[in-house]
Image (cartoon, rainbow, N blue to C red):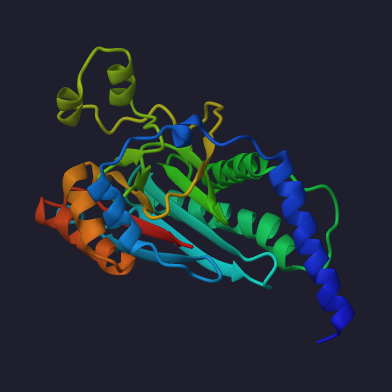
Length: 310
C-alpha cells in the first residue's frame, strides 16, 4: 500500500470524528441518572468485565412470523463494522427494526422500504466518509443525519407503499455512543446487569398518550382495544419530526431493539432473565422470540441485541 495514501486516510478519519462529535448534541439526560448498587452487585459486575482491544460490538438478532399471523410485516437490519488503526479504534453499527402495517402487501413493503432506505442513507452519509480517502464538504451532526434519514424513509414509504405505514427504530453506534431515531411503537432498551431495564424510546401510540394524560394506567393500556393505534408512523401524511437522542452505551450491558411482538407479549422480568443468562446475543434473541411464541405469538416478532465490549 502507498504510505502517503495510508497516512492521508488516517488524517481524514481523525478529522471526520473531530467535526462529527464537536457539533453533535449533548447526551440525553437519562444517561446521567445513576442508581446505587450494593457491594454484591458491584463485585458481580466487576467479574464480568474483560478488556477487549480494540473495543467491539457483539450482535445477535432473531425474527418470527409468530403463531397467529400468516405473513411477516417486520423488517430488521444489522450492520456491524470496525475501524482500528491503533490510534482511532472505533466500532460502528447500524441496527434497525421496522414494524409494518396497512394490509398484507403494504405493511411488508413499507417496513422493508423504510429499513432499506434508512440503512442506505446512513451508509452513504457516514460509512463511505469514514472509510474513504476524500473528505469533501462540511459534515452534518449525527442528529441531523438521523433526522434526514428518517425523512428519506418517509418519502420512500409514501412512494412505494401508498396506504401502508411502518414504525422505525434505528440505532447508529459509533464507539461507545448510540444515536437513536424513532417513530412509532417499536422500542429501544438499555439492559444493565444490575437489574435495570429501561426503554429509551417513547411509544407514539394512543394508549401511551392516554397514560401520560393520566386517563388510563399501564394495566388498562395492556388490554385497551386501541392499544395498536399510532399517532405517529412513517407513511402518515401529517408532517412530523422523529424522536432523536444520543446516549452512552451501557458497558457492561446491552442495547436491545424490538417490535411490539416481543415487548407487548413478554414481560420485562423475563426479557431481563433471558438476556442476562445467555452470554451469546444470538442465542438470547432466539430465546426471546421463542418466549413470545410460547406466550401465544399474536404478532410478528423481531429482536436485535447489541453488547459493547471494551
